[in-house]
Length: 264
Length: 85
Image 1 (spheres, rainbow over the protein chains, first blue to last red):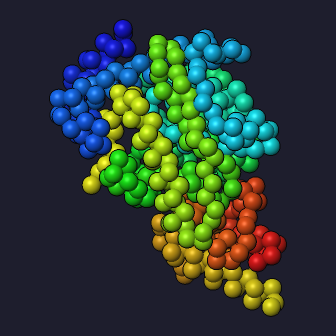
Image 2: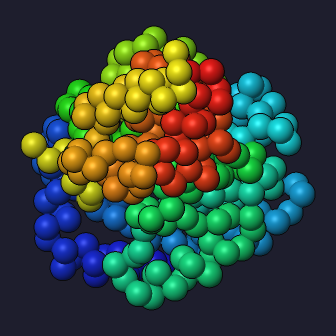
Image 3: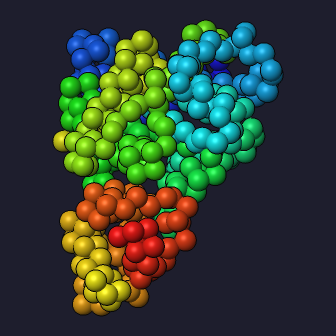
């Protein structure tokens, strides 16, 4: 209730995000009617507020051995085998869909997880998020850092590396279709896969009820090196974007539409 | 091929790769063994490009743990020679 109220106030005053969210929904083709698109964007804003509350409350069940009351799991067997193998690391690529925090903390029951984080604009949310992330076996690593090897270190330690790849990647990104429109997409997950041969998969965590989530993964993404780096990257990123689109289509109100994904 | 000419050849290959992939213009006048990895304009993302290109151009796969401690071009060249370049 409080989260919804806060989201309503924020929505009311952040006109820019309203427009970006609505226009992104229309651009994706999920909804063409501006009023319905705006409604989806508004629900998505509520969803983001709920994500924060859920992430705080989920510690109660994420620590339990039996999570069946709260989690429905659809983890592909090849991914599960890697998760359970102490000698293997895994790159988990995801987007700002559903509750990625819950997924990150659930997967840390297998092995420590490192995830790239950026500082939140709101100091209160930043302090909440910091406290939250230090629980379980989740280690935040900075988006920008002088330590060039920070991603490689995680994989070398046989830990999981969780990367959200769906924000505008700027000059380092590669233009890959997202809902049929080119979007600058982060190359980090596929580059790490191609260079280190670490297994890579897509994962999502969709809310299917109050404090109930469905965590899904793709099968492991196998992309043999062709010798043409750009073609290899395009193949992997295309696959990841399609997986993310499919997840979003299941419930468009759980996606961060307020982010300026397309900037042409 | 002598060690020195081998080293020269690899440095030339690395320069070619970096000319293609580096986001920052390195100081080519002083490009050599003592160039630091940082001065080459590499970061956590572009170093992955470099490793991919090294494998394609020079034919040597470097393990992540081997690369983590490298700070200069000379150390990278030594590592490549050690791995059969």
